[in-house]
Length: 302
Image (cartoon, rainbow, N blue to C red; front, side):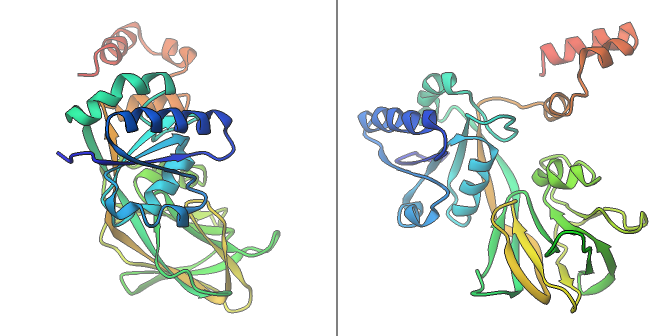
């Protein structure tokens, strides 16, 4: 188990309570003799010098804060603990009022680590300075550069041309990202521990352009047609402009997002709540026996 000697605190810059919580948490950790630094993940260059020695990142915000932390810390093997100050966080572990209770657990080793697969993206034909290799926890997407004009996007998998899709965009998602934008575009849901990736066309011109589940070691290349520019987005962040014919190569990253958990997380129950599959009216619609079985399982996830 990792001994925690240095802790970084990422806080959401537009949430006053996040900054206040970061200051309080830093003071508490300092009293424990822990090396602490704080930063906003929106400005990753501020934390670059600290990450090589950091054992744990505590993220005060929502899923977006965790996504930024995972990208910033890729390759540094930091643990990530999310504290939910967002609206519908799926990756966070604690509510703010639970943090004080679990701080001792971090230093006593009373936690589990949930490893999540990440993606590596290599942009091709970027308008301006190339950002080099990019990391993503959720997804990588290329698409049209202007409203009202669908893009022609060629898709290769393992060097083989799959076809040319006419769509608003094409998303390559990890298992974690399969419940995000890819899902809203009609893609399948993968269990978080799956190592596969999902390729999902967004608003395709023809219904035959169906989403695909690909093996985790697949190398995917997406290229725009040569008549129109487009854009590249990683984890839904600020897009990069692409020249006509530009694109991206996506593969599974060697880095993992290492999320701290303090107990088992029944994925399907959590998913059902998020997608409103566990609405009371839906539960009442099943047989009484089914309801009793459901109640018993959710009351005791073990």
